[in-house]
Image (cartoon, rainbow, N blue to C red; front, side, top):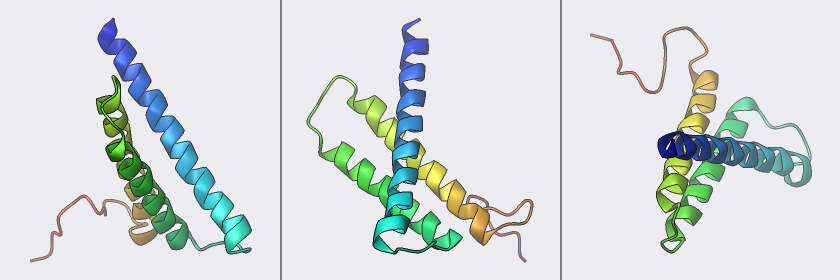
Length: 103
């Protein structure tokens, strides 16, 4: 039961971090750039926001849920890379995670 609770907490933290990163990009687009940003720019700013969130988590002192926060931060970075992935590799089967198959 405790494992399910921790998994639920991590999933909730990932959703909150992803929402915060997306909201940061939206607010930057609206108030700083004052125009709609391109998809790749949104992707890179989302990744930057995820890295900033993870950096803040790393600076926190030892608290009971620090490992859950670190895991949520890493998963958020992965989610932002996946969002960025769809702009650079829109076709099927191509990914930043896969190795090149060229010979």
